[in-house]
Image (cartoon, rainbow, N blue to C red; front, side):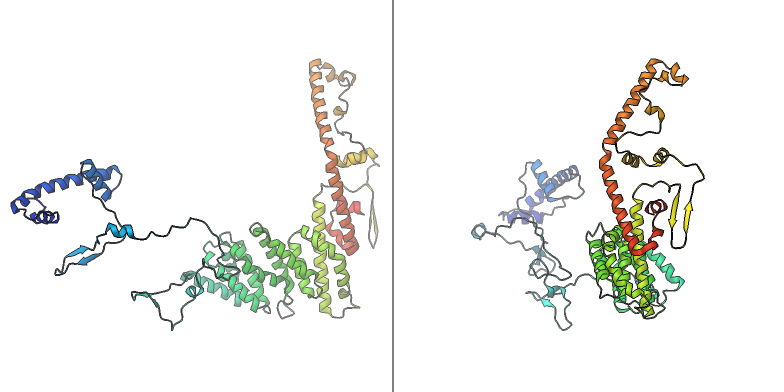
Length: 540
């Protein structure tokens, strides 16, 4: 018995215009229709397997019809879902609402607009936190939260439309508890052992990146409102240092929010409201934080160190600023490196010390607190300038030891040092100098060597008193002479390139000598501890 009922055959016959098909003919055609359907589906399954697929599609059926020389089914597919309608008078009967399209209507319909060419256009999403009102950006009314009294909008068909706001940043419960505990320790228990353990956790934990924007906002708020609370400020700077030490946190996008708070703790006029508050230590620690930020992120933000240096230099050169602000600016510039001190601080030392000197003298400044602050600034300048000259002298090769007879002059006594050995000849002293100094003293570029055999290359080995040379064969002597001539030629070529290097070295030496003389005139003998012993001997 066929699975295709005879009623299906009769309906199909009626759809193509055959109304007088007998029931016996329909019953006889049903098995043949089933056979043809099975044959087509088996071919379609073969096409599917050859296409390396597991899902049978209409394309497979069309391919099977072509293989059987049957005209494929024409039409087009739509991605829209099928719309079923209930047949009138039948409760469980549905049909697809498929409209008939008239070719005349399609031909007479107006042509659609030509599509625009594809192009890439850039526009600003936000400028300094403000969204520009341009067509590419969403209107502000859509982003803004709707008021409680505003009803939801409605479409033409009456369905309500809810405006979805941007997704909020959601933190897990554990991170919220962690953040609350850290902020509590910073505000009220910064001197406890638990706070130190919390700082160690901040510096090493790998899952704290979602908390970085919350920490930056917390630090900015507390610094702006708590300048009179010294323990809080110091705890906040230690918090910043721990965040910077964490290798798993990408803090670069939040530096523009973090830097104002850090610079405030460096050059603020007053930090804390008690005399016992050691704000000098806070400024020194903050200078270290600033130097670490510039060292790590100067390659990401090219103008970071430039802008910071301008801010600190302006605070240093402004006579209307307080002495404590000058101290913070000097410590910040010194932390950025000896080159910054040599280029920006040293040229202004003479003028600044002339203005600072009255504040340091007891006769002109009776306020002991201001006099103490002036001496602290003087010590910071001395340390910065000393590190600068030490770094400058460290660039050059090590100088020889002091001469055999050296006189050290101080305000108290004169120390005369004599060598226990016999007095050396000028040739002996010349041998102790580096090769560059030897050539500069000789006046002529003559190759120097400590090996006497190199100086006697052109002599006959037999004429020397060495018995081993007399036993050498003439072939060995010729090879040895050729090797020595090649070494001498290489040395002469190297000497020809030496004058340019010597000129640069002598120029650097001269600049260093002028810098050392300037610092000696400004600070006196206080600059001596920063100068190495060989350079000190030549300077004296």
